[in-house]
Length: 124
Image (tube, rainbow, N blue to C red; front, side, top):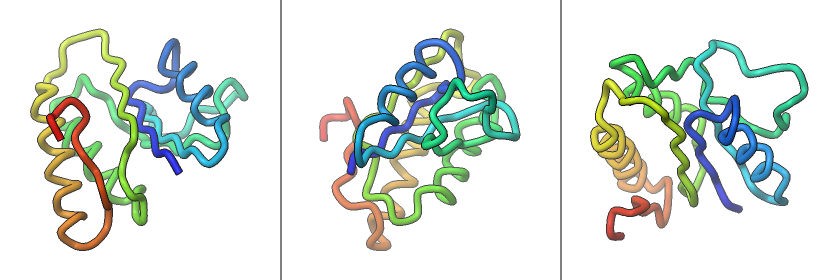
């Protein structure tokens, strides 16, 4: 069962990708939104699992994303695809976010959770 994380899934290309992936059978899509509530209005597939309150322009965004994912992904074997749609410079460097996500997954692997997760583009 593929697991997809889309950072910036509420509008534009991110919303289109989230909708496309969420229509595929046995695919779970996690999408970030800046708001404290999941998007409504019927334009986004209701199968999308929302990681709420993630505003990447905030300094604490990477840590908050990792903390929210720890809560949401219990039992998930890993992310097959991670898409980041950011059109401005992060206050937290992308490499730091990647490191924090990798650390998060390493902790879960040590505890017998996520199996077979590898960092995309990280050489394995």
